[in-house]
Length: 325
Length: 250
Image (tube, rainbow over all chains, first blue to last red):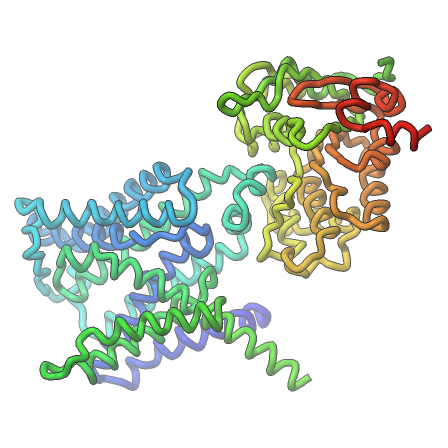
Protein backbone atom coordinates (compact mmCIF):
# COMPACT_ATOMS: atom_id res chain seq x y z
CA UNK A 1 0.00 0.00 0.00
CA UNK A 2 2.69 2.45 1.03
CA UNK A 3 4.69 1.36 -1.98
CA UNK A 4 1.74 1.98 -4.29
CA UNK A 5 1.29 5.44 -2.76
CA UNK A 6 4.94 6.25 -3.28
CA UNK A 7 4.80 5.11 -6.87
CA UNK A 8 1.64 6.98 -7.73
CA UNK A 9 2.09 10.13 -5.65
CA UNK A 10 1.94 12.29 -8.79
CA UNK A 11 -1.47 10.98 -9.78
CA UNK A 12 -2.65 11.29 -6.19
CA UNK A 13 -1.68 14.96 -6.10
CA UNK A 14 -3.19 15.85 -9.48
CA UNK A 15 -6.48 14.00 -9.06
CA UNK A 16 -6.71 14.99 -5.38
CA UNK A 17 -6.34 18.67 -6.20
CA UNK A 18 -8.87 18.34 -9.03
CA UNK A 19 -11.34 16.78 -6.59
CA UNK A 20 -10.87 19.58 -4.05
CA UNK A 21 -11.02 22.52 -6.45
CA UNK A 22 -14.84 22.61 -6.84
CA UNK A 23 -15.15 22.66 -3.05
CA UNK A 24 -13.30 25.95 -2.77
CA UNK A 25 -13.63 27.52 -6.22
CA UNK A 26 -16.97 28.56 -7.68
CA UNK A 27 -15.64 30.56 -10.60
CA UNK A 28 -17.28 29.10 -13.73
CA UNK A 29 -14.35 30.07 -15.97
CA UNK A 30 -11.89 28.26 -13.76
CA UNK A 31 -14.09 25.16 -13.42
CA UNK A 32 -14.57 25.13 -17.19
CA UNK A 33 -10.80 25.03 -17.66
CA UNK A 34 -10.56 22.17 -15.19
CA UNK A 35 -13.18 20.10 -17.03
CA UNK A 36 -11.30 20.64 -20.28
CA UNK A 37 -7.95 19.78 -18.73
CA UNK A 38 -9.38 16.50 -17.43
CA UNK A 39 -11.17 15.66 -20.68
CA UNK A 40 -8.17 16.46 -22.89
CA UNK A 41 -5.97 14.54 -20.48
CA UNK A 42 -8.28 11.51 -20.64
CA UNK A 43 -8.34 11.74 -24.43
CA UNK A 44 -4.55 11.77 -24.56
CA UNK A 45 -4.52 8.82 -22.19
CA UNK A 46 -6.83 7.01 -24.60
CA UNK A 47 -4.46 7.88 -27.45
CA UNK A 48 -1.53 6.74 -25.30
CA UNK A 49 -2.95 3.20 -25.11
CA UNK A 50 -2.27 2.81 -28.83
CA UNK A 51 0.44 5.42 -29.43
CA UNK A 52 2.43 5.07 -26.24
CA UNK A 53 1.96 1.54 -24.97
CA UNK A 54 1.54 -0.29 -28.29
CA UNK A 55 3.73 2.03 -30.37
CA UNK A 56 0.93 2.55 -32.89
CA UNK A 57 1.28 6.29 -33.34
CA UNK A 58 -1.99 7.54 -34.76
CA UNK A 59 -2.67 11.02 -36.12
CA UNK A 60 -6.27 10.14 -36.87
CA UNK A 61 -7.80 9.60 -33.47
CA UNK A 62 -10.17 12.49 -34.11
CA UNK A 63 -12.07 9.90 -36.15
CA UNK A 64 -13.13 8.09 -33.00
CA UNK A 65 -13.69 11.33 -31.12
CA UNK A 66 -16.02 12.45 -33.92
CA UNK A 67 -17.83 9.11 -33.96
CA UNK A 68 -18.53 9.50 -30.24
CA UNK A 69 -19.62 13.11 -30.64
CA UNK A 70 -21.89 12.44 -33.61
CA UNK A 71 -23.42 9.26 -32.21
CA UNK A 72 -24.78 11.00 -29.15
CA UNK A 73 -25.69 14.22 -30.95
CA UNK A 74 -27.59 12.40 -33.70
CA UNK A 75 -29.35 9.94 -31.41
CA UNK A 76 -30.24 12.81 -29.08
CA UNK A 77 -31.51 15.36 -31.60
CA UNK A 78 -33.14 13.06 -34.15
CA UNK A 79 -34.41 10.19 -32.06
CA UNK A 80 -34.49 11.80 -28.60
CA UNK A 81 -32.33 9.17 -26.99
CA UNK A 82 -30.19 9.69 -23.89
CA UNK A 83 -26.57 10.68 -24.55
CA UNK A 84 -25.55 7.68 -22.46
CA UNK A 85 -27.13 5.48 -25.07
CA UNK A 86 -25.41 7.61 -27.69
CA UNK A 87 -22.14 7.03 -25.88
CA UNK A 88 -22.72 3.28 -25.99
CA UNK A 89 -23.58 3.45 -29.69
CA UNK A 90 -20.46 5.51 -30.34
CA UNK A 91 -18.31 3.02 -28.44
CA UNK A 92 -19.73 0.11 -30.46
CA UNK A 93 -19.14 1.90 -33.76
CA UNK A 94 -15.64 2.87 -32.66
CA UNK A 95 -14.86 -0.67 -31.58
CA UNK A 96 -15.77 -1.84 -35.07
CA UNK A 97 -13.96 1.04 -36.78
CA UNK A 98 -10.91 0.66 -34.53
CA UNK A 99 -10.71 -3.06 -35.19
CA UNK A 100 -11.09 -2.47 -38.93
CA UNK A 101 -8.42 0.24 -38.95
CA UNK A 102 -6.12 -1.84 -36.77
CA UNK A 103 -6.60 -4.90 -38.92
CA UNK A 104 -6.27 -3.17 -42.29
CA UNK A 105 -3.21 -1.15 -41.33
CA UNK A 106 -1.61 -4.03 -39.48
CA UNK A 107 1.31 -4.44 -41.82
CA UNK A 108 1.99 -0.72 -41.95
CA UNK A 109 4.67 0.51 -39.62
CA UNK A 110 5.75 3.89 -38.30
CA UNK A 111 4.87 6.80 -40.58
CA UNK A 112 2.79 4.60 -42.88
CA UNK A 113 0.49 3.64 -40.04
CA UNK A 114 0.19 7.31 -39.04
CA UNK A 115 -0.68 8.27 -42.63
CA UNK A 116 -3.37 5.61 -42.85
CA UNK A 117 -4.98 6.95 -39.66
CA UNK A 118 -5.02 10.50 -41.07
CA UNK A 119 -6.69 9.22 -44.21
CA UNK A 120 -9.25 7.37 -42.10
CA UNK A 121 -10.24 10.50 -40.15
CA UNK A 122 -10.39 12.56 -43.34
CA UNK A 123 -12.78 10.07 -44.93
CA UNK A 124 -15.08 10.43 -41.92
CA UNK A 125 -14.80 14.21 -42.16
CA UNK A 126 -15.95 14.10 -45.77
CA UNK A 127 -18.84 11.78 -44.93
CA UNK A 128 -19.98 13.93 -42.00
CA UNK A 129 -19.73 17.20 -43.90
CA UNK A 130 -21.42 15.93 -47.09
CA UNK A 131 -24.14 13.62 -45.81
CA UNK A 132 -26.42 16.56 -45.11
CA UNK A 133 -29.59 14.48 -44.77
CA UNK A 134 -28.22 12.80 -41.69
CA UNK A 135 -25.62 15.13 -40.20
CA UNK A 136 -26.77 18.62 -41.37
CA UNK A 137 -23.39 18.72 -43.13
CA UNK A 138 -21.02 21.55 -42.38
CA UNK A 139 -23.63 23.45 -40.38
CA UNK A 140 -23.01 21.05 -37.54
CA UNK A 141 -25.41 19.93 -34.85
CA UNK A 142 -26.33 21.99 -31.79
CA UNK A 143 -26.81 19.71 -28.79
CA UNK A 144 -29.72 21.05 -26.70
CA UNK A 145 -29.15 21.48 -22.98
CA UNK A 146 -31.67 19.42 -21.03
CA UNK A 147 -30.95 19.44 -17.30
CA UNK A 148 -30.42 16.10 -15.58
CA UNK A 149 -27.83 13.36 -15.27
CA UNK A 150 -29.63 11.13 -17.80
CA UNK A 151 -29.35 13.85 -20.43
CA UNK A 152 -25.89 15.00 -19.30
CA UNK A 153 -27.27 18.46 -18.70
CA UNK A 154 -25.02 19.13 -15.73
CA UNK A 155 -23.62 22.10 -13.87
CA UNK A 156 -19.94 22.88 -13.80
CA UNK A 157 -19.26 21.12 -10.51
CA UNK A 158 -20.95 17.91 -11.64
CA UNK A 159 -18.99 18.06 -14.90
CA UNK A 160 -15.73 18.34 -12.99
CA UNK A 161 -16.48 15.16 -11.06
CA UNK A 162 -17.69 13.30 -14.14
CA UNK A 163 -14.56 14.27 -16.08
CA UNK A 164 -12.45 13.40 -13.04
CA UNK A 165 -14.02 9.94 -12.82
CA UNK A 166 -13.23 9.31 -16.49
CA UNK A 167 -9.69 10.64 -16.06
CA UNK A 168 -9.03 8.36 -13.09
CA UNK A 169 -10.51 5.39 -14.96
CA UNK A 170 -8.27 6.01 -17.98
CA UNK A 171 -5.25 6.55 -15.78
CA UNK A 172 -6.04 3.22 -14.09
CA UNK A 173 -6.23 1.45 -17.44
CA UNK A 174 -2.76 2.73 -18.27
CA UNK A 175 -1.39 1.62 -14.90
CA UNK A 176 -2.89 -1.80 -15.57
CA UNK A 177 -1.04 -1.83 -18.91
CA UNK A 178 2.22 -1.32 -17.03
CA UNK A 179 1.73 -4.28 -14.72
CA UNK A 180 -0.30 -6.88 -16.57
CA UNK A 181 0.67 -9.77 -18.82
CA UNK A 182 -1.11 -8.07 -21.70
CA UNK A 183 0.75 -4.83 -21.07
CA UNK A 184 4.19 -6.43 -20.87
CA UNK A 185 3.65 -8.37 -24.06
CA UNK A 186 2.37 -5.19 -25.72
CA UNK A 187 5.59 -3.47 -24.65
CA UNK A 188 7.46 -6.24 -26.43
CA UNK A 189 5.48 -5.56 -29.60
CA UNK A 190 6.21 -1.85 -29.32
CA UNK A 191 9.94 -2.38 -28.79
CA UNK A 192 10.53 -4.92 -31.56
CA UNK A 193 7.84 -6.81 -33.44
CA UNK A 194 10.11 -9.46 -34.94
CA UNK A 195 11.62 -10.30 -31.57
CA UNK A 196 8.16 -10.36 -29.98
CA UNK A 197 6.96 -12.86 -32.60
CA UNK A 198 9.95 -15.10 -31.94
CA UNK A 199 8.98 -15.09 -28.26
CA UNK A 200 5.51 -16.41 -29.00
CA UNK A 201 3.60 -13.12 -28.95
CA UNK A 202 0.77 -12.79 -31.49
CA UNK A 203 1.88 -9.28 -32.45
CA UNK A 204 -0.84 -8.49 -34.97
CA UNK A 205 -3.64 -9.50 -32.64
CA UNK A 206 -2.22 -7.46 -29.76
CA UNK A 207 -1.88 -4.37 -31.93
CA UNK A 208 -5.47 -4.66 -33.12
CA UNK A 209 -6.71 -5.06 -29.54
CA UNK A 210 -4.74 -2.01 -28.39
CA UNK A 211 -5.96 0.20 -31.24
CA UNK A 212 -9.54 -0.99 -30.71
CA UNK A 213 -9.45 -0.30 -26.97
CA UNK A 214 -7.91 3.10 -27.61
CA UNK A 215 -10.62 3.89 -30.17
CA UNK A 216 -13.44 2.99 -27.78
CA UNK A 217 -11.97 5.11 -24.97
CA UNK A 218 -11.54 8.06 -27.34
CA UNK A 219 -15.12 7.72 -28.52
CA UNK A 220 -16.48 7.83 -24.95
CA UNK A 221 -14.75 11.13 -24.35
CA UNK A 222 -15.95 12.42 -27.72
CA UNK A 223 -19.51 11.95 -26.53
CA UNK A 224 -18.80 13.68 -23.22
CA UNK A 225 -17.07 16.59 -24.93
CA UNK A 226 -19.95 17.14 -27.37
CA UNK A 227 -22.50 17.10 -24.55
CA UNK A 228 -20.37 19.45 -22.50
CA UNK A 229 -19.64 21.98 -25.23
CA UNK A 230 -23.09 21.65 -26.81
CA UNK A 231 -22.11 21.75 -30.46
CA UNK A 232 -20.74 19.27 -32.98
CA UNK A 233 -18.91 20.75 -35.95
CA UNK A 234 -17.52 18.19 -38.44
CA UNK A 235 -14.53 20.37 -39.29
CA UNK A 236 -13.54 20.45 -35.66
CA UNK A 237 -14.35 16.97 -34.35
CA UNK A 238 -12.71 15.19 -37.30
CA UNK A 239 -9.81 17.63 -37.67
CA UNK A 240 -6.15 16.70 -37.86
CA UNK A 241 -5.57 19.51 -35.33
CA UNK A 242 -7.52 17.54 -32.78
CA UNK A 243 -5.69 14.30 -33.53
CA UNK A 244 -2.40 16.15 -33.16
CA UNK A 245 -3.56 17.57 -29.84
CA UNK A 246 -4.19 14.07 -28.43
CA UNK A 247 -0.74 12.98 -29.51
CA UNK A 248 1.04 16.18 -28.43
CA UNK A 249 -0.35 16.22 -24.90
CA UNK A 250 0.94 12.69 -24.42
CA UNK A 251 4.32 13.35 -26.06
CA UNK A 252 4.94 16.56 -24.13
CA UNK A 253 3.75 14.98 -20.90
CA UNK A 254 5.61 11.72 -21.37
CA UNK A 255 4.65 9.15 -23.99
CA UNK A 256 3.94 5.67 -22.68
CA UNK A 257 3.57 6.83 -19.07
CA UNK A 258 0.28 6.80 -17.16
CA UNK A 259 0.57 10.34 -15.86
CA UNK A 260 2.17 11.91 -18.94
CA UNK A 261 -1.04 12.66 -20.84
CA UNK A 262 -2.45 14.49 -17.83
CA UNK A 263 0.73 16.48 -17.22
CA UNK A 264 0.76 17.44 -20.90
CA UNK A 265 -2.88 18.42 -20.77
CA UNK A 266 -2.40 20.59 -17.70
CA UNK A 267 0.44 22.48 -19.36
CA UNK A 268 -1.00 22.80 -22.85
CA UNK A 269 -4.65 23.40 -21.95
CA UNK A 270 -3.97 26.05 -19.34
CA UNK A 271 -1.40 27.77 -21.52
CA UNK A 272 -3.78 27.76 -24.45
CA UNK A 273 -6.71 29.06 -22.40
CA UNK A 274 -4.54 31.81 -20.99
CA UNK A 275 -3.06 32.84 -24.32
CA UNK A 276 -6.43 32.84 -26.02
CA UNK A 277 -7.92 34.99 -23.31
CA UNK A 278 -5.10 37.53 -23.19
CA UNK A 279 -3.86 37.74 -26.73
CA UNK A 280 -6.71 37.05 -29.09
CA UNK A 281 -8.92 40.05 -28.60
CA UNK A 282 -10.78 41.30 -31.65
CA UNK A 283 -8.24 43.98 -32.44
CA UNK A 284 -5.09 42.05 -31.67
CA UNK A 285 -3.32 40.13 -34.37
CA UNK A 286 -2.51 37.16 -32.15
CA UNK A 287 -5.46 34.91 -32.94
CA UNK A 288 -3.41 31.87 -33.81
CA UNK A 289 -0.55 32.39 -31.42
CA UNK A 290 -1.35 29.34 -29.30
CA UNK A 291 -0.39 27.23 -32.34
CA UNK A 292 3.06 28.80 -32.27
CA UNK A 293 3.29 28.00 -28.58
CA UNK A 294 2.31 24.40 -29.37
CA UNK A 295 5.02 24.05 -31.95
CA UNK A 296 7.67 25.69 -29.83
CA UNK A 297 6.73 23.53 -26.85
CA UNK A 298 7.00 20.40 -28.93
CA UNK A 299 10.42 21.32 -30.29
CA UNK A 300 11.71 22.11 -26.80
CA UNK A 301 10.43 18.83 -25.40
CA UNK A 302 11.79 16.69 -28.21
CA UNK A 303 15.15 18.45 -27.99
CA UNK A 304 15.62 18.66 -24.23
CA UNK A 305 13.31 16.18 -22.49
CA UNK A 306 12.44 13.43 -24.98
CA UNK A 307 10.78 11.42 -22.20
CA UNK A 308 8.44 14.33 -21.47
CA UNK A 309 7.39 16.06 -18.27
CA UNK A 310 6.90 12.72 -16.52
CA UNK A 311 10.51 11.81 -17.29
CA UNK A 312 11.65 15.24 -16.10
CA UNK A 313 9.81 14.81 -12.80
CA UNK A 314 11.33 11.35 -12.36
CA UNK A 315 14.84 12.67 -12.93
CA UNK A 316 14.34 15.59 -10.54
CA UNK A 317 13.19 13.13 -7.89
CA UNK A 318 16.19 10.90 -8.44
CA UNK A 319 18.44 13.96 -8.25
CA UNK A 320 16.85 15.14 -4.99
CA UNK A 321 17.17 11.64 -3.55
CA UNK A 322 20.89 11.70 -4.32
CA UNK A 323 21.33 15.15 -2.81
CA UNK A 324 19.57 14.11 0.40
CA UNK A 325 21.37 10.79 0.65
CA UNK B 1 28.55 -39.74 -42.68
CA UNK B 2 27.99 -42.19 -39.88
CA UNK B 3 26.81 -39.97 -37.08
CA UNK B 4 25.53 -41.59 -33.91
CA UNK B 5 21.81 -40.93 -33.71
CA UNK B 6 21.01 -39.26 -30.38
CA UNK B 7 17.24 -39.71 -30.62
CA UNK B 8 14.13 -39.57 -32.77
CA UNK B 9 13.70 -36.84 -35.39
CA UNK B 10 12.70 -33.48 -33.92
CA UNK B 11 12.89 -31.37 -37.05
CA UNK B 12 12.94 -32.59 -40.62
CA UNK B 13 13.53 -30.33 -43.60
CA UNK B 14 12.43 -31.95 -46.85
CA UNK B 15 13.73 -30.25 -49.99
CA UNK B 16 13.07 -26.76 -48.64
CA UNK B 17 13.33 -23.99 -51.23
CA UNK B 18 13.01 -20.22 -50.79
CA UNK B 19 13.15 -17.79 -53.70
CA UNK B 20 13.26 -14.01 -53.82
CA UNK B 21 12.23 -13.04 -57.33
CA UNK B 22 14.78 -14.65 -59.61
CA UNK B 23 17.17 -15.47 -56.79
CA UNK B 24 16.97 -18.82 -55.10
CA UNK B 25 18.28 -18.18 -51.60
CA UNK B 26 17.70 -21.74 -50.38
CA UNK B 27 17.45 -24.63 -52.82
CA UNK B 28 16.25 -28.15 -52.05
CA UNK B 29 17.78 -28.30 -48.60
CA UNK B 30 17.02 -31.46 -46.64
CA UNK B 31 18.25 -31.87 -43.08
CA UNK B 32 17.21 -34.04 -40.20
CA UNK B 33 17.70 -32.83 -36.65
CA UNK B 34 17.30 -35.41 -33.90
CA UNK B 35 16.42 -34.83 -30.30
CA UNK B 36 19.63 -33.97 -28.45
CA UNK B 37 21.51 -32.85 -31.57
CA UNK B 38 23.86 -29.91 -31.65
CA UNK B 39 23.92 -29.14 -35.35
CA UNK B 40 26.13 -26.49 -36.89
CA UNK B 41 25.43 -24.64 -40.12
CA UNK B 42 28.32 -22.98 -41.90
CA UNK B 43 28.87 -21.37 -45.26
CA UNK B 44 30.16 -18.17 -46.84
CA UNK B 45 28.23 -14.89 -46.62
CA UNK B 46 25.08 -15.05 -48.68
CA UNK B 47 24.98 -18.85 -48.60
CA UNK B 48 21.40 -18.79 -47.28
CA UNK B 49 22.02 -19.68 -43.63
CA UNK B 50 19.91 -16.94 -42.10
CA UNK B 51 17.28 -17.33 -44.81
CA UNK B 52 17.01 -20.99 -43.82
CA UNK B 53 16.50 -19.93 -40.17
CA UNK B 54 13.85 -17.45 -41.27
CA UNK B 55 12.02 -20.18 -43.14
CA UNK B 56 12.22 -22.67 -40.26
CA UNK B 57 11.08 -20.14 -37.64
CA UNK B 58 8.16 -18.87 -39.72
CA UNK B 59 9.40 -15.45 -40.91
CA UNK B 60 9.41 -16.63 -44.51
CA UNK B 61 7.03 -19.06 -46.15
CA UNK B 62 8.92 -21.78 -48.04
CA UNK B 63 8.25 -21.85 -51.79
CA UNK B 64 8.63 -25.61 -51.87
CA UNK B 65 9.36 -28.47 -49.51
CA UNK B 66 8.19 -29.37 -46.04
CA UNK B 67 9.28 -28.35 -42.55
CA UNK B 68 8.18 -30.96 -40.04
CA UNK B 69 8.62 -30.21 -36.34
CA UNK B 70 7.61 -32.96 -33.95
CA UNK B 71 5.44 -34.55 -36.61
CA UNK B 72 3.64 -31.33 -37.60
CA UNK B 73 4.15 -29.52 -40.90
CA UNK B 74 4.90 -25.98 -39.67
CA UNK B 75 5.93 -24.47 -43.02
CA UNK B 76 4.42 -21.01 -43.38
CA UNK B 77 2.96 -20.84 -39.87
CA UNK B 78 3.39 -17.56 -37.98
CA UNK B 79 6.55 -17.33 -35.84
CA UNK B 80 4.57 -16.94 -32.61
CA UNK B 81 2.70 -20.18 -33.27
CA UNK B 82 5.95 -22.01 -34.02
CA UNK B 83 7.41 -20.63 -30.80
CA UNK B 84 4.43 -21.96 -28.87
CA UNK B 85 5.10 -25.38 -30.38
CA UNK B 86 8.58 -25.26 -28.88
CA UNK B 87 10.84 -23.91 -31.64
CA UNK B 88 12.36 -20.47 -31.40
CA UNK B 89 15.40 -18.53 -32.52
CA UNK B 90 17.75 -15.65 -31.82
CA UNK B 91 18.65 -12.93 -34.30
CA UNK B 92 22.04 -12.35 -35.88
CA UNK B 93 21.49 -8.62 -35.49
CA UNK B 94 20.29 -8.66 -31.90
CA UNK B 95 16.82 -7.28 -31.26
CA UNK B 96 16.60 -6.45 -27.56
CA UNK B 97 13.57 -4.60 -26.18
CA UNK B 98 15.91 -1.63 -25.75
CA UNK B 99 13.92 0.51 -23.34
CA UNK B 100 13.06 -2.36 -21.02
CA UNK B 101 15.19 -3.88 -18.27
CA UNK B 102 16.98 -7.18 -18.74
CA UNK B 103 14.48 -8.74 -16.33
CA UNK B 104 11.48 -7.44 -18.28
CA UNK B 105 13.03 -8.61 -21.56
CA UNK B 106 13.33 -12.17 -20.32
CA UNK B 107 10.03 -12.05 -18.44
CA UNK B 108 8.18 -11.22 -21.67
CA UNK B 109 9.56 -14.46 -23.07
CA UNK B 110 8.48 -16.37 -19.96
CA UNK B 111 4.94 -14.95 -20.23
CA UNK B 112 4.41 -17.08 -23.32
CA UNK B 113 4.18 -20.18 -21.10
CA UNK B 114 3.04 -18.60 -17.86
CA UNK B 115 -0.20 -16.68 -17.30
CA UNK B 116 0.95 -14.92 -14.15
CA UNK B 117 3.38 -11.99 -14.16
CA UNK B 118 4.79 -13.03 -10.77
CA UNK B 119 5.53 -16.57 -11.95
CA UNK B 120 7.06 -15.27 -15.18
CA UNK B 121 9.26 -12.87 -13.23
CA UNK B 122 10.51 -15.70 -11.01
CA UNK B 123 11.23 -17.88 -14.03
CA UNK B 124 12.99 -15.01 -15.78
CA UNK B 125 15.20 -14.61 -12.71
CA UNK B 126 16.26 -18.26 -12.95
CA UNK B 127 16.97 -18.05 -16.69
CA UNK B 128 18.98 -14.87 -16.19
CA UNK B 129 21.02 -16.68 -13.55
CA UNK B 130 21.68 -19.57 -15.95
CA UNK B 131 22.80 -17.19 -18.67
CA UNK B 132 25.15 -15.27 -16.42
CA UNK B 133 23.26 -12.00 -16.55
CA UNK B 134 22.36 -11.87 -12.85
CA UNK B 135 24.38 -8.73 -12.16
CA UNK B 136 22.56 -6.86 -14.93
CA UNK B 137 18.89 -7.65 -14.19
CA UNK B 138 17.91 -4.02 -13.71
CA UNK B 139 19.96 -2.59 -16.58
CA UNK B 140 18.17 -1.21 -19.61
CA UNK B 141 18.78 -3.63 -22.46
CA UNK B 142 20.10 -0.93 -24.77
CA UNK B 143 22.87 -0.02 -22.35
CA UNK B 144 24.40 -3.52 -22.43
CA UNK B 145 27.60 -4.15 -24.40
CA UNK B 146 27.25 -6.47 -27.39
CA UNK B 147 28.51 -9.55 -25.57
CA UNK B 148 25.79 -9.28 -22.95
CA UNK B 149 23.15 -8.39 -25.53
CA UNK B 150 23.93 -11.68 -27.29
CA UNK B 151 23.44 -13.47 -23.99
CA UNK B 152 20.18 -11.61 -23.43
CA UNK B 153 19.04 -12.78 -26.84
CA UNK B 154 19.66 -16.38 -25.74
CA UNK B 155 18.09 -15.87 -22.29
CA UNK B 156 14.91 -14.39 -23.74
CA UNK B 157 14.52 -17.29 -26.17
CA UNK B 158 15.19 -19.83 -23.41
CA UNK B 159 12.44 -18.31 -21.29
CA UNK B 160 9.89 -19.51 -23.84
CA UNK B 161 10.98 -23.09 -22.95
CA UNK B 162 11.96 -24.24 -26.45
CA UNK B 163 12.74 -27.85 -27.30
CA UNK B 164 14.65 -26.68 -30.35
CA UNK B 165 16.62 -23.45 -30.31
CA UNK B 166 18.14 -21.81 -33.38
CA UNK B 167 21.14 -19.61 -32.60
CA UNK B 168 22.11 -17.19 -35.37
CA UNK B 169 25.74 -16.10 -34.91
CA UNK B 170 25.62 -15.55 -31.17
CA UNK B 171 29.44 -15.55 -31.13
CA UNK B 172 30.05 -12.92 -33.79
CA UNK B 173 31.78 -9.83 -32.48
CA UNK B 174 32.70 -11.27 -29.09
CA UNK B 175 36.14 -11.08 -27.48
CA UNK B 176 37.91 -14.33 -26.54
CA UNK B 177 36.66 -14.30 -22.92
CA UNK B 178 33.05 -13.69 -23.97
CA UNK B 179 33.44 -16.37 -26.62
CA UNK B 180 34.52 -18.99 -24.07
CA UNK B 181 31.64 -17.94 -21.83
CA UNK B 182 28.95 -18.31 -24.45
CA UNK B 183 30.40 -21.61 -25.68
CA UNK B 184 30.20 -22.93 -22.12
CA UNK B 185 26.61 -21.75 -21.95
CA UNK B 186 25.69 -23.52 -25.19
CA UNK B 187 27.37 -26.72 -24.01
CA UNK B 188 25.51 -26.58 -20.70
CA UNK B 189 22.17 -26.06 -22.41
CA UNK B 190 22.92 -28.96 -24.70
CA UNK B 191 23.96 -31.16 -21.77
CA UNK B 192 20.64 -30.29 -20.09
CA UNK B 193 18.81 -31.82 -23.03
CA UNK B 194 18.16 -28.86 -25.35
CA UNK B 195 18.45 -29.48 -29.08
CA UNK B 196 20.25 -26.70 -30.94
CA UNK B 197 21.03 -25.54 -34.45
CA UNK B 198 23.87 -23.06 -34.52
CA UNK B 199 24.91 -20.76 -37.36
CA UNK B 200 28.46 -19.58 -36.90
CA UNK B 201 31.33 -18.11 -38.86
CA UNK B 202 34.02 -18.85 -36.31
CA UNK B 203 35.23 -22.23 -37.54
CA UNK B 204 37.45 -23.02 -34.59
CA UNK B 205 34.49 -22.63 -32.24
CA UNK B 206 32.24 -24.61 -34.51
CA UNK B 207 34.70 -27.48 -34.75
CA UNK B 208 34.79 -27.83 -30.99
CA UNK B 209 31.08 -27.29 -30.43
CA UNK B 210 29.03 -29.03 -33.11
CA UNK B 211 28.46 -32.76 -33.34
CA UNK B 212 27.43 -32.48 -36.94
CA UNK B 213 27.83 -29.72 -39.50
CA UNK B 214 25.81 -28.80 -42.56
CA UNK B 215 27.58 -26.68 -45.17
CA UNK B 216 25.55 -24.33 -47.36
CA UNK B 217 26.87 -22.73 -50.52
CA UNK B 218 24.78 -20.61 -52.91
CA UNK B 219 21.67 -21.82 -51.09
CA UNK B 220 22.46 -25.51 -51.53
CA UNK B 221 23.64 -28.09 -49.05
CA UNK B 222 27.04 -29.17 -50.33
CA UNK B 223 28.13 -31.31 -47.38
CA UNK B 224 27.03 -32.75 -44.08
CA UNK B 225 28.99 -34.68 -41.51
CA UNK B 226 31.18 -34.65 -38.42
CA UNK B 227 33.52 -31.65 -38.11
CA UNK B 228 36.58 -33.71 -39.04
CA UNK B 229 34.82 -35.06 -42.12
CA UNK B 230 33.79 -31.55 -43.17
CA UNK B 231 37.34 -30.19 -43.02
CA UNK B 232 38.50 -32.92 -45.37
CA UNK B 233 35.66 -32.45 -47.86
CA UNK B 234 37.07 -31.10 -51.11
CA UNK B 235 33.99 -29.03 -52.02
CA UNK B 236 33.86 -27.43 -48.58
CA UNK B 237 37.52 -26.51 -48.72
CA UNK B 238 37.09 -25.00 -52.18
CA UNK B 239 33.87 -23.15 -51.40
CA UNK B 240 34.46 -21.92 -47.92
CA UNK B 241 37.38 -22.98 -45.78
CA UNK B 242 40.27 -22.51 -48.20
CA UNK B 243 43.59 -24.34 -48.26
CA UNK B 244 45.10 -22.32 -45.43
CA UNK B 245 42.48 -23.57 -43.01
CA UNK B 246 43.19 -27.20 -43.84
CA UNK B 247 46.94 -26.69 -43.51
CA UNK B 248 46.50 -24.88 -40.20
CA UNK B 249 44.33 -27.66 -38.83
CA UNK B 250 46.73 -30.40 -39.97
